[in-house]
Length: 213
Image: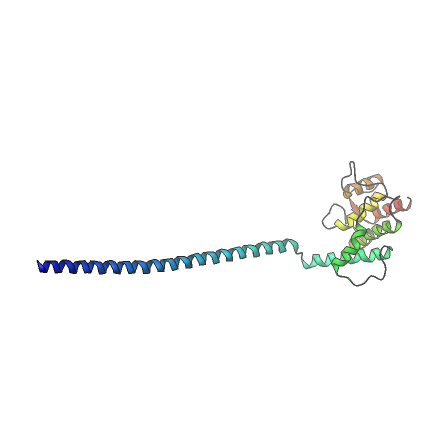
């Protein structure tokens, strides 16, 4: 009887030891799992922050790609700005003694000359109309022919050309929706080939009409 009691007590002690061991092991495993879980959460947060940064940089690069222009196009734009400045000076619209300026500063100086309503022979100052004519003449001297249908290449020149066309009665409105249509209407009315291209013959005829008004 005594032996069986000792055996039962020993069994109970053994079971208690096993339970304690399992409890300690479970606590240690739980703590390790908690640390692992925290590490995973931290890595997940870091990965998300990294992905957000990559997406932001990608959007920034896409924005830069849309706004940047090729070196050749930039040089052409700068040349156009300087041409407008020199033409405005020659026309008396800007003083000869302009200080050195960055391109964006020069644009601010020239911008007022490019604004305003529709030009006509009666309400446009002679110097301003001379400015518009000079811009078109410089483009013709550079390219020989101005294709008024090529609005991307000739956007600035077409603005000045339309001012000249306005002054001789070929303004936009009615059936004339574009500068190209105004030029072709003028060519048709004056026995010229109606191709919408301003070359020496068409320009000479336009100048003849501007001088007669």
